[in-house]
Amino acid sequence: MIDYKKFKLDNGLRLMVHEDDSTAMAAVNILYDVGARDETPDKTGFAHLFEHLMFGGSINVADFDTALQAAGGTNNAFTTSDITNYYDLIPAINLETALWLESDRMLGLDFSRQALDVQKKVVSEEFKEHYLNQPYGEVWHKMLSMSYTKHPYGWPVIGKNLQHIDNFVLDDVKAFFKKHYCPNKAIITIAGGVKTGEVLELVKKWFGDIPPGANLNRQLPTEPAQTQQVKQQMEAAVPLNALYMAFKIPARLHQNYYAADFMSDILSHGRSSRLYQSLVKEQQLFSNISAYVTANIDPGLLYIEGKLHEQVAMETAEQAVWDELNQLKSEHLNEQELVKVKHKIESHIEFSQSKILNRAIDLSYFELIGDVELINTEATCYSNLTTKAIKDAAEQYLTEENACTLHYYASQN
Image (cartoon, rainbow, N blue to C red):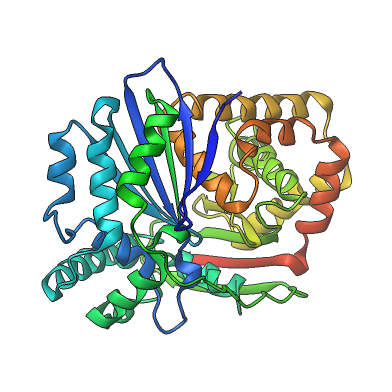
């Protein structure tokens, strides 16, 4: 059981505190309720760019990293379609240093054209390295645009293209900061060798005077129900042909999300999983194959992706995948397989929560989506699943009319 205390400051900032006296470290997690889904189709990649800008210096601190490292701390951040998350790990005795630094960049960044130009170049190089010049790199742009026709999940966090990144100007930066980087759009979680009362006073000291931003009335377009399979193909200079499939699944808090996630583990969690045993080991159609879910706040995707062995026809490989999916739909799991996957999931959750930083990140995220107690009950959500629930979910989501399929061919030139 992970204990925590919740507070809310007058400016709307939410605070979560988790005490753990077994460590002398403190994890500081700041989640901002903004991600790629808050962008517009003509200005994509901005949430990710802003993640980088937040390390470029604030009004009073020219270099965030150097100041934190001087206090024995480390830090990093990540952006998803739903959130932007910053975290620090620091000796608990120096917790105030991290709070001072985080409050200073929440209060105001160093809005300079030079800082913007530097980070635009960094993100552009990242785009080229991971998406343009990486084998299969552009596949996620293709898969997301196939899967979403209305919802802003239809582009990757990095953005649609380099032109969007190049076209950002300083006024865009200031407007984005004012709209999203304010106390009432943030959740701070502090976990580790701390005392709740002391943490509350420090957070009030450093964040309490920061004015809130305007309330955000998020009205995202609803993705229409898919009624027929979307199928495309592409060709590029890659080593092997590859098959990609995406199926719409429920949102993170939907009651069927856990069944959909469980399905992905049945299909592809370790060498004893169904796809590996049948398609890699026995039939030798794929050199590797995997399945996983996106776990989005709004309805997400279950992906299946695999690299084909040479000389294997794409149609043969795809049909073999469908054979496995149809088997999952047509019969109940045996109890042994059900228990095995449940144990793997339980072990994964327990291992993840053994680290104070992961606890801090999870507490912030679960508070954002509206059920912070999932930090203690999520394992039960999986353990309570029945063979019927898995079969029903497979029948509902793993259908041809709910599939987006990409045949990715290695060019012959």
